[in-house]
Image (cartoon, rainbow, N blue to C red; front, side, top):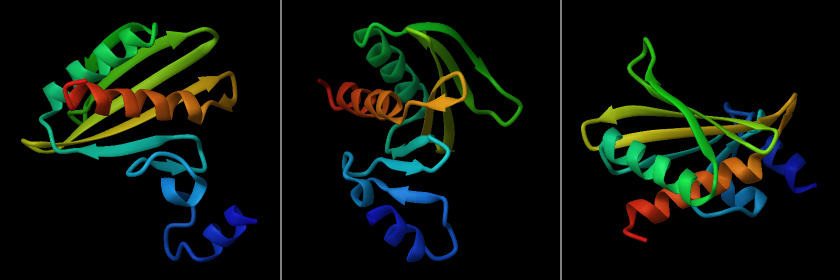
Length: 127
């Protein structure tokens, strides 16, 4: 019911739900497609380093890191039958948006993607 109410009042962006509306961590946003995103006040390189460390702490194997044609850093990883993709987009020199998605075949695992974002935030905070 909460989901239906959230969709009904979301205005012009019907596929985005805030974390508060679905009971997850504060400041982490979700899309209905399973993508989790958060903006950090930190340079892209710092967020990338923190993301790789966080995934290492979680036992997630990073397969590759590359820059795409849009200037985003793309980190691909694997964890148990899940393919993980993290995209880091520099919004300014000191602000980076992180988008994470974990997939198991056609199913999306938003809990794992959320944890990657939260653990990245922990590492950036010095934890």
